Length: 369
Image (tube, rainbow, N blue to C red; front, side, top):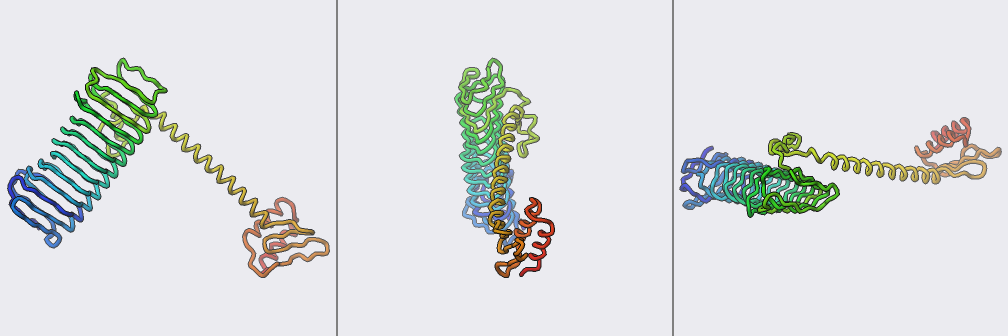
């Protein structure tokens, strides 16, 4: 079902909820075109203000100048060509945006990608990977759970990222770039970039002419050119700064960021160290588990098998092999356990009893009740 609404070239549209996926496209037309099943779609209009609710998937075409306020999307969302401001509260699935203006996003629970932003971008929380390319304004990312890729951002950048960060930037004089990453950071800039770098990481590598590397340094301050742009980078893993245009050619191994320009070649030692540490930790845990198991076996043996005068006591059963003793004296009428059978076999293996005695004991166990 299609529904057409006329609300001017710059309507104010509020989407309160979409229970499925959302496709939102800005077009040259003056009308709003809605596509959804009639029984799941609700539309209220007051002049140039339009309020929309949909209990399933929704496809919307709006004038390019429309401004959007979106509260809840339960599925995935694709937004492109909308040049008014966009505010989003909560997106449960993936969010893809292209050719938009300013964007304020509260929470996206899965992947987020933006290419072609004319204004500022602000994200409070992203639950997975974030990919951002070709943005004119400032980028503020309060909390990114997984990886971040940035390319061609002309404004300031502030980001807190749980895992890896890759940035291809041509810094502008007076701009500031403050990025914290839980793992590694790769920063690629043109050979004539002007930047003042303050770097903190486990290992710092700078692939730059006339800049010497210090293998032991975990903190460095380096000035490139006139230092007119300011970078403050902190990584829980390694930082690499490079001016090589091909630094990201191995990006195809990095999932969602293929083609964004990434390179982890140079981080091989760190990966090897982590593998060695993980292997050693597994070995330690296995050794500890073996010791605990051995101790439990010894304790079980002590509980199960106790030598008594003229014979053995196994679990609930007393075995008397003295000349005047009787072969079997059950303590109580209970079914023998596997533990008791294993104890007899172990005594036979250790030659504490003969094969005939073992057979006698096993026979008694099988028949005793």
